[in-house]
Amino acid sequence: MKNTWIRVGLFLLALAVAGFLWFRALSTQAAESKVVPYSELLGTIDSGKVTEVLIEQERVVAKLKEKSDKGREQTVVASRLPDLDERDLLARLEKNGVTFSGHIEQQGGLWPAVLSSIFPLVMLFILFRAWGGMLGGGKGAGAARPMSFGKSQAKIYDRSSENKTTFEDVAGVDESKAELMEVVNFLKSPAKYHAVGARVPKGVLLVGPPGTGKTLLARAVAGESGVPFFSMSGSEFVEMFVGVGASRVRDLFVQAKERAPCIIFIDELDAVGKTRAGGGVFAANEEREQTLNQLLVEMDGFDAGSGIVILAATNRPEVLDKALLRAGRFDRTILVDRPDVKGREAILQVHAKRRKLEPSVDLKVIAQRTPGMVGADLANVVNEAALASARRDGTSVEAKDFEEAIDRIQLGLKKEGRVMNDAERRRVAWHEAGHALVALSVKHADPVHRVTIIPRSIGALGATLQLPTEDRYLMTREELVDALTVLMGGRTAEEVVFTDVSTGAQNDLERASELARQMVCRFGMSELGAQTFGRPGGGPFLGGPVSFEERNFSEETAKRIDAEVGKILEAEHRRAKELLVARRPVLDAIATRLLEKETIDREELEALAKVGSTPP
Ligand code: ADP
Ligand code: MG
Ligand code: ZN
Image (cartoon, rainbow, N blue to C red; front, side):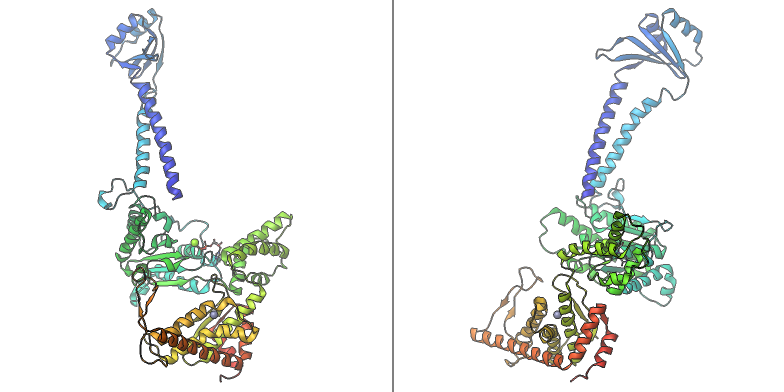
């Protein structure tokens, strides 16, 4: 949008300048000079009306004594005769007391005229284009597009440019890097992949919190792959006028196809890719929808073998239109997550390379001091530390400069809820350890992939990631019950270790309650028997969240349902507690390791669990 206002401003300026020049051109030319036959010019000179004469290569210009009605100077112009007897002319001029001068530079006399007549035209042309850019080529552009209005403004990264980004500049996100490396390899030697019939993803979506290095990763891909790289931000597609975005998308793909193999990078995809459903009241929405539709069309319009890979990044995958994530579009998602201690150290190293650090500065300690920070924050820390050092006229950055920088930046992050105090961290560590240990101990739980106490967003202070071993269509009662126990594990661990509980388990409890209620009402898995209760009603929008349930049972039954739900939850709570109490040493070991490393992966977790007591 900002872009558009700048353009409107330029447009008006150009209009004013062009108008002014046009007016001047009209007034300086037509009003003053009159073209006459040579004979008439001689007559005018003889009659004494002329004060001054300029003899040029091609013509003779005579300035008249008399001003025009409007008070302007008047000239009379005649073409020179092919073989003019200059003596005769000069004699005449002398006789009448006219000053005269020659001018033989061929274009001299012509220049002002050319300039003043062509320049406004050029201005008009430029102006017309700018205007056209704003209006866009309309919906049915393509062949009928007059001057490529709404052309894509994708920046093409020059491969040979000096300051190119490589994977070395990105640290702490090794998994994401490894996955992107595959894309790079494909673009470098597509033949190898075709030979074995490997299908390379068409679209790769980078997802992660702001500042974790998504844009940086994309730039690194450009730097590494050595193929043309078209980069555009989602917000650049969505302009003020309907149709521009769509035509830009079209144009972007036309350019890309000409230069395949290549990469198209759409940053901030959510600006275009927001879900289409719901209140299309504003024109801006219509524009965005058209752009999104065009993007979908283009993505379907080339096959995976064409050598174009579309890379996109977003902080908000949850708002993306589902159609974008379907197979054949963005069919691979790469998580770019907040870095753990090790990752933070690596990122600090990248940024410290360009600064002069006191040898005593230990980046590991700084990494430990900065939980919850992302790459952008850490880059900021290093920069602030350098500034602090400069402020005190230091020659190199010292540990105390880092302390100052961290304090300054953490103050800001605290407001965003991304920094925890020590007591909070301990609680979260035991909470997550509780989930993990229960998952390790019950028979049917999905294996724990990773446990972390790196805060993701407000409300989720840590996470225990379980990966299902296979796609599930059915779940047995035992599996559901185990899932419930795992959900209970976090809060129960807090109970066991700290005796009181915290608000941190809210989401777990919500999910557990919902699951238990479904077991009773939907799946017939309680003492109430094989029966369903209630009917799911549609929300205000089809497919939207279910906002109410149609109730088809008595008040009496409602009480029994509530009682059953309570019973199930209580039973699993008790089971989780027994488990955790029995394996308390393992629980403590996991939590302690979490505080230390922030993230524990599956192997390490299983190793820790083995050392402790055997499962009951
Ligand atoms: P995002 O696009 O995910 O919001 P950016 O890629 O724009 O984040 O990151 C902003 C800046 O923060 C980068 O230019 C870089 O200086 C720094 N940065 C972020 N992540 C990393 C990282 N993983 N390694 C090194 N520097 C990083
Ligand atoms: Mg970005
Ligand atoms: Zn939890």
